[in-house]
Every structure is written in structure tokens, then in C-alpha cells.
Length: 90
Image (cartoon, rainbow, N blue to C red; front, side, top):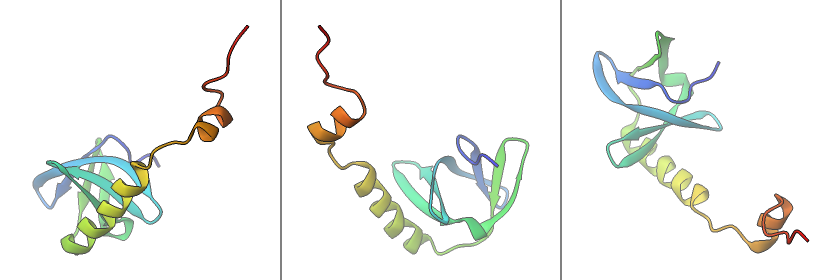
């Protein structure tokens, strides 16, 4: 099941938008923050929305910060070349 690009609710209240799956976590953009919500906290998924049960928000912020750091790492020229970028055509 695809959990990306869905509205996320905590109970009845709008909470954020799902943007990635990171291991056993759902990455949710909440304002300017990224929280890693444990998938086991997903109560339901229906009609384009995800409803969450209670979870440890402080832990979700910490793991969300790790996700941001991992996704923000600069790419080396060697990595770009391995994906076919930077090759001279001629």
C-alpha cells in the first residue's frame, strides 16, 4: 500500500502530509518539521487520508531529524556519474 502524499490526521484533527517511508516509520511533514511516526501508530488508511493513534512526538522529532540529515547529504561526483549524470556526450 502506498502511504505517500496523503493527508495525515491525529484523531479527527488535521496533522500533516505523508512524504516518505523510512524503515518502520512514516515521515510526516508537520508545518516546517518532519516527524517519523511509527507505522504501528497508523490506525487506518482510507479515502486518501491516514489516521494516527497516539505516539511519542519527541521521539518522532528526533528520528525525523535523522531522516532530514540522511536525505540532505551532498552527492559526490562519483555518485552522480554512477547515475549517468556528468557524462560528456560527443
